[in-house]
Amino acid sequence: MARFRYSMQSILNIKLKLETQAKQEFSAARAALDREEEKLQALCDRKDGYAQAGEALLSGVLDLRAIEENREAIRCMEVFIVQQQGNVEAAERNLEKVREKLAEVMMERKTHEKLKEKAFEEFLMEEKRQESKEIDQLTSYTYGQRLVV
Image: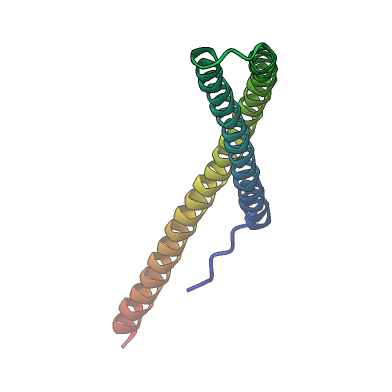
């Protein structure tokens, strides 16, 4: 039996490498989004801490300077939170772009794998035809030899 050799195997190998790279890019983009979300959460927690400290300042002996500093710290945290939300949204957009690229690369790889499967099926059918032809020739030869004898 002859060996099956897929003529576009090199292209399929390239598609597999591209898919691996796209998966790594997706993983990196996901990690970047997670980091940005963690930063946002840390800023929100910090703002909540300032808000609780502000409530404590209002309930005890009034220190106007400390109260004003606390309010300024809360305003700064709000600005930082808005900026960080923008960073999170940018990371989400990047993740979506990378996800679309990954889906496209996976589809191309699957297409080439289907083509390889079809080529292999055709190869097997050709092998069966060739084997059947050889059997027919052998049968004809054997039958012809009996008639001659």
